[in-house]
Image 1 (spheres, rainbow, N blue to C red):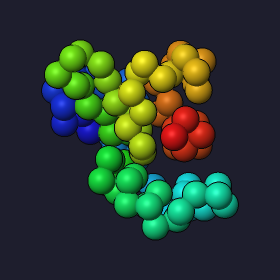
Image 2 (image 1 turned 180 degrees about the horizontal axis):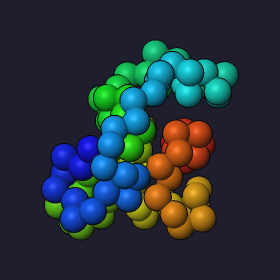
Image 3 (image 1 turned 30 degrees about the vertical axis):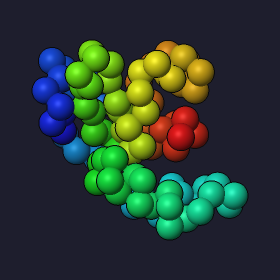
Image 4 (image 1 turned 180 degrees about the vertical axis):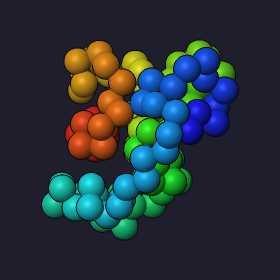
Length: 89
């Protein structure tokens, strides 16, 4: 679940595989095919995916939202919930 070598997993140590298209469809102004492609390549549909980047920052969730963005979209917390993560995207 933390393939990037994270010291701990903010979203838990178990995968949470979700239906990507159900989250992409929440926003009608998004290209559904592009949205599904992005989430598929970023997390493989695992809403609990977490990766540590070489600069020490973290990417979390379905769309791999970087921790520099957490304050603006999830109150500073890791956006582990796929609804929150989709909102952040």
